[in-house]
Image 1 (cartoon, rainbow, N blue to C red):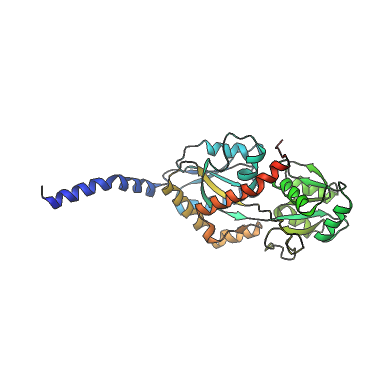
Image 2: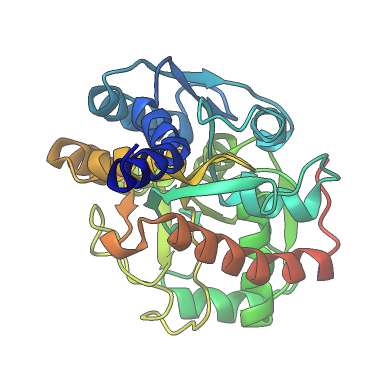
Length: 327
């Protein structure tokens, strides 16, 4: 065999393993993908997952299923993905509660950060500081003054122990030097129902649940607990604009795969997500849900990993100092 032909043959043989790996990555997905939603159908996480799955299905030319696995504030569904094969066919959509707060309030069989491969950030939505209609103050600064003058008189509704709503209220107390009682509910909808009925005084809840009641004049909106005003309610000031610094509470969503999923597959999934979030119809539907989209430069596995870690570092000390444990 001539030397040049021999070198070509050897070089080609050496390249075969890399070529096979590339072909396998290019072949993904070859069967349906399942996105596990850790809550019941119809909620914000489920709605976002279904919008995303629809576009990913078109991108891949492959079925993308949404499966609701409920219980224990989302930890059952997230745990299922943590135990799944790291092959890119079982994914976890989650949010601040499932992938941050649960790690401090539950004794989990998985680690909310270390047992997952980040794919991409999805959406972000600040919460609203709201109060019952008959509450005397009309502005956030006046509300704080009233709470200070009447310690432990007001009752704040929370969507449950260990929830973002409860943790946000504890942060609010810490920042403002106020004290009030807590009343735990089984979700944000019953909290808002009792705000409308005047059974509780205030809450920090998602805009999807609260804005319709604010629009109807049945409850008061004091501030957006975030860095920017809501596109759907630009008349409501941010907490910073209302004179309260540091009250930034983000109800954000992300997409993860089990730990050990190949980087080539993560890259393909990220490409599908970015494609979906670039679609004008998807962007409009997210805006209608009061969900903001992260800047393009943050829609990377590294962007999700950094944001996820920063949120854990922010919230876990607050939860542990307050001894918050899930029921």
